[in-house]
Length: 138
Image (cartoon, rainbow, N blue to C red; front, side, top):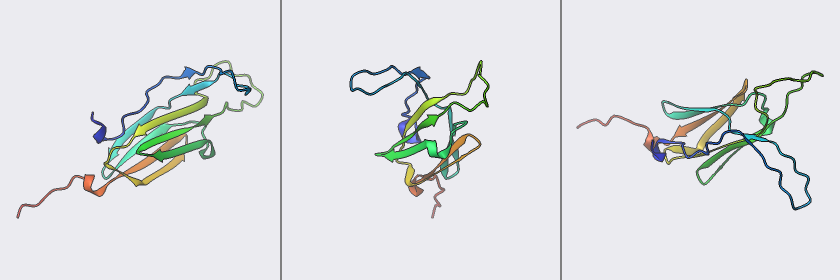
């Protein structure tokens, strides 16, 4: 699939343990860093990016666009279990990040985002000249 078709120059990383860094006097501890599951599909005149982010509040989320690079990052904190000590959990916690290179087909001014029920949805409108159309023969 070519880069022109859309968004795939992503950094495909599995969850990795962060390594503590030493040196500048800051107290650093190891943590988790993960890449959330994401689906991208075409819906007529736009692309839709749906990212699974259970437990993420919109205030813990940052979406940036710079030089055709769309980056989504944030943090998932450990859920409050009302005094219970979880024995096993499957939700990812810690920092997450995902980066996509946008093609020229995307109208970068027409990107909108919405988060609901643990799913972040971004709508990426296609530039008008990128939308397929039928040309009449005269």
